[in-house]
Length: 43
Image (cartoon, rainbow, N blue to C red; front, side):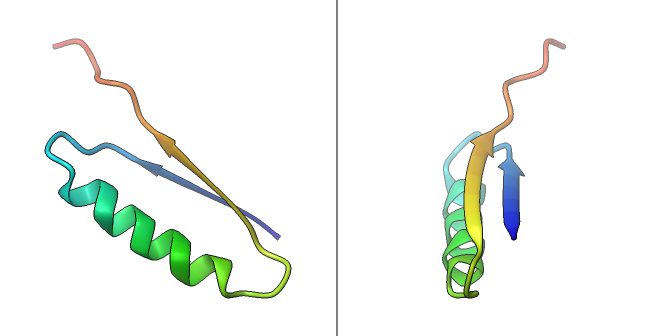
């Protein structure tokens, strides 16, 4: 099973949450977790 976690974190709080989610997903047998940070969108 592949898990993709896409997140945007300006100050690092959401990044830490995404890492926690990834840690939980990695506990599932056969799970391959990839984390990707979304790029800033131009305003």
